[in-house]
Image (cartoon, rainbow, N blue to C red; front, top):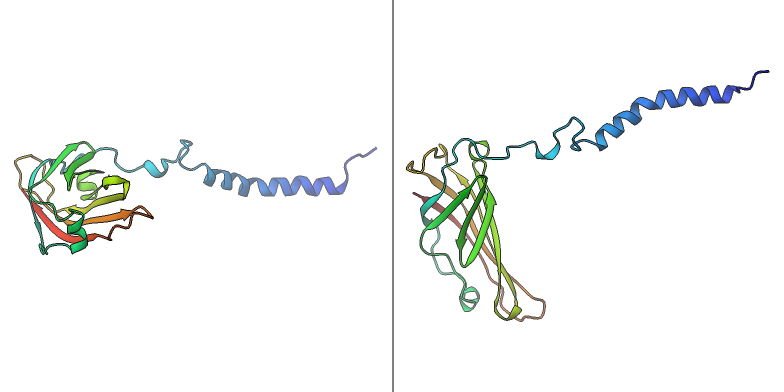
Length: 179
């Protein structure tokens, strides 16, 4: 006696036919999981070329006019003095306006330098953030004694607590820094 129905034969063909798309879908979902695809972290993990960016830079703003009266009332303004970068491959740190900024630098791979940090305002009235978004100009330095230039944008923004009643403050300025 024959126990297999024509319907189950069709189901087996459908399962065989769907096997390839299902395997492809599973492959797409597991990308970056260590199963053959390097995934999102396939970029450089350390700086290899043009990495000697640590040091003291003369910081100059293209517009050095004072910030708004609201910013000055909070005691916030443009940083003065040098931009001093510390580099512990690939991490870069500096301090501007009493805020420690941290970011990553991969050298000749991208030449980009993006640093960010924030600090609380007095009396828990909110905080302010400082951001440096810049490019190290080519050629990136391979020695600490080599000249280096950085261009970018400096931004300081106050983020008040909802009931703080403090004025808004935003400073955005382009800058150059040379050593």
